[in-house]
Length: 369
Image (cartoon, rainbow, N blue to C red; front, top):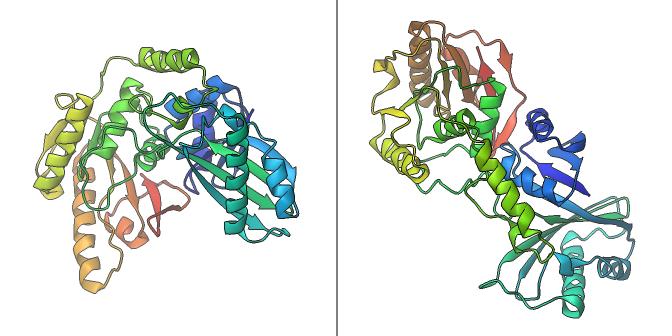
């Protein structure tokens, strides 16, 4: 089977590296993700283990469709009853079209939804699940060739299942994971986030340190499929837990905001790691550490509309961050920001800069000293 793991544009290389670690087959880098092959076990493993992917799609069928009746008839040939029990399941179809006779994407989505419901009405079985769930279907029509894919993930994969407390402008877990991969973080290196917010970078670092699979604590769309092999799902979840190792590292975070520290503590408690990560309620200007040669990783505020006053205030924060890095012996800085001038305000010389990564209408980069 062919699958597609999506990610934020700019993170494709890191996603490919992540796929190689889980031994996916025939990996092909594409814009906004990567294609790979495998079986149902691969679907389960990809959802549980991939840290950068936002969604894993299973390619169901590719066929030529120049007219709506062709689109409906071809879609009705796909065995959707293997993935959707009956019409109590809410089917959500998203479609795109380019350079094709079927150019109206909304109309294409409506026809595909109709065809799926027709198929399920004929061959579906009554659901044994308590309550209805949602199944996402994705349709891409290009040059009159239609590809129909089914979402295997459900909620986007950055939702790890533990974060119940957030702060303003939270960092996605997938982006935090990517920043840690970019900085080549390992358990041997102490880690500090001096502006930790709700603790996303800290929890992702802890999970990497202990080799906790990102999707260990959540459910997926494939859990509800009639065709799902429950034994394989159970085995892969168990394997992910057995892969975990004892925590041996040093991780610390700090933030000037009481609200952020409270949110971080709630999220740590959800994971049962509140005693494993050191937290302090301090501005970066007064921060000190006993860690030797740490990775200092940080997602400082970067502002959406920077006038002269705002820029000056933020530059002062970035300068304080640079001062902390300089006074911490043998440290390295991984900075996440959208603004080159703010990165320069740290006074740190960066050896590596990532491609831009779209996030909330902005384009951030990772800077590594």
